[in-house]
Image (tube, rainbow, N blue to C red; front, side, top):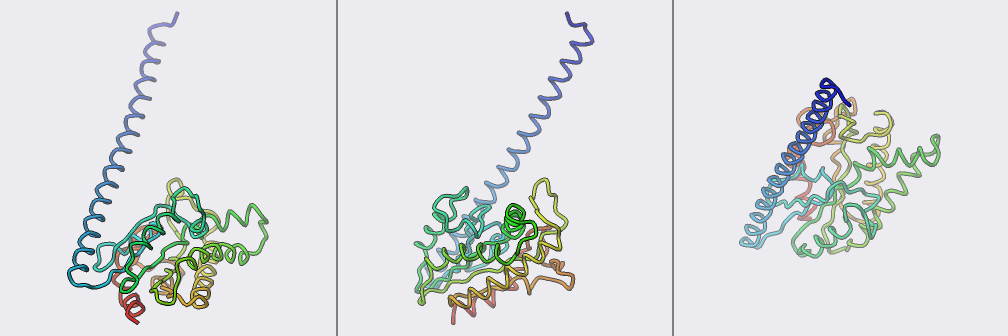
Length: 260
């Protein structure tokens, strides 16, 4: 039979585990509430854009994609639709964790192509995680170019499905490689130098393929990168994402393409 001291230890252990679990759920509830509040604000602003544009019979700029699309939020006449952790590689997939293909299809159906513009924001997650992981799994000494090319070929398979000469469609470049992030919460694969190499190559290929297809290319990398290849101060939101200064700095470029 357990002694009183052992019973105390068991009791303390149970209470400690319970407290840890409660803390976890409290954190989860706070995050969920914050995200729901954030989604509500985005939804209200998007409604405002639709109503204002409708009353003025003017166009809307739809910006859709991964979490980097959020850098464009709260700026008229932009409507942001965040697809979660979507990748360029999986945008063509019939089934994916984020259902990005289905979500894109719904946005495409909403766009009034006679006056609206659509900007696609995908690729940062590919550069930060999947390209390097593909290299490791296939050949650690393999050619980065072939992995990047195959990723962008899949991406542009989805772009070609919605592209048309009469449509204003843009592809957004990828920001500088993530640095100074907590790798426990933000998965990162490969050294910073390697990811910088992948990011530069990814952007070069994106720009080339966009030109071939006749869609616009929004070069955010050249705009926000400092001399060291990192994100310049005013554009830095955290180690991965760009600040809302991005929407201010790129609005002129988007408008010129949209109205050309």
